[in-house]
Image: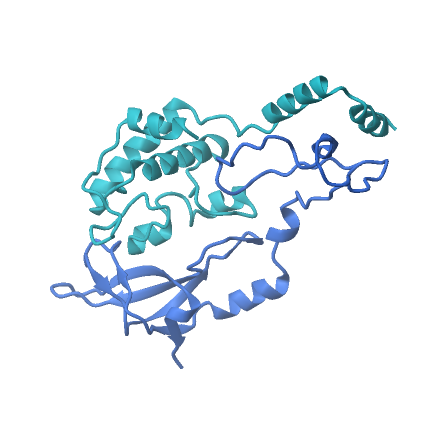
Length: 145
Length: 146
């Protein structure tokens, strides 16, 4: 009954009130909270260190690297482990427990295949020359999202 | 009326939406005739529970268990880099045994795309004991050896 009333009520609203309603709806559908700076810094350092260790390089477009690092940080905050941010999962907790997709994932560890394009082998067309990325670069690249 | 609570489990940064597609006010300024919305409003049922999709049937578990221990041979050129003693190892033609099927874990389905964990024993020069190598393979990268 309450929902019925709400529905009917909203159709009788004046255009002004209706637009403010839409504005508040826009706020409600905002993307989730950003990962903590600490986690981003941890994943940034991990990415640099692992790129050096594995002999891989970051993408020519550092925006790609930044988004992936942020995604890893986000999963680290929400799930406790940096699950690969570029995949879809049915049960994230189970995936974290099993560990196949915990970064560095099995395909990366064994075959140096990173479909996120975070770690690229030198022969890859999109590989840059760098194995470093600063926090400022990450913040700048992801601020436009 | 069920509320539509869909939790995106893809990339964490989904694009912003102006108006939820499920909010009735979406139709107010549309030039087209409004769809007939029932007075009860919308109801959408979303499969939020992950239990149904990720739990495995006992048949699947038995099938997976049956494969463990089987001898296999790698049929495609496959370089692995995680073996310390052999930096650049090509597994093509090597024989091993399936140790584990990782796509099932504690009765739940895992989205691993290399589900077969195979153990190889590879002889190395200057060492009596062969090196034990564990590698994850896809179904189409090996064949069963009788």
